[in-house]
Length: 84
Image (cartoon, rainbow, N blue to C red; front, side, top):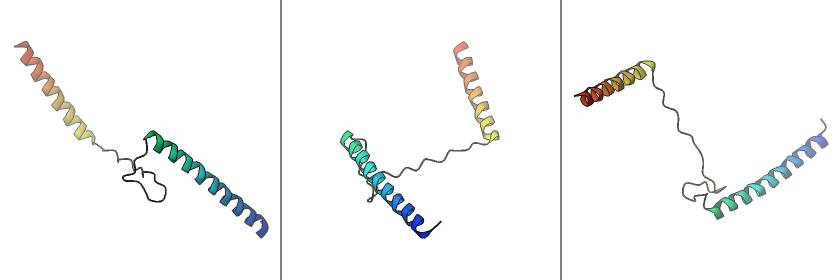
């Protein structure tokens, strides 16, 4: 690729970046108007909240088995109570 073609591609990408930033700003304004955008905890640059999903908790097979057995024991105790 020639330097001219690279310069043109970079210029086009910068223009697209500017257009997308303006569009995102309009979306943020619409969300703010609707009350869906909190200012607390937002970043200073974009005014949007950073989203970090909570990691999923992993339970081992042995732990699931213990929980299952404990639940069965509770159900059996309740059933025995109701029968009495």
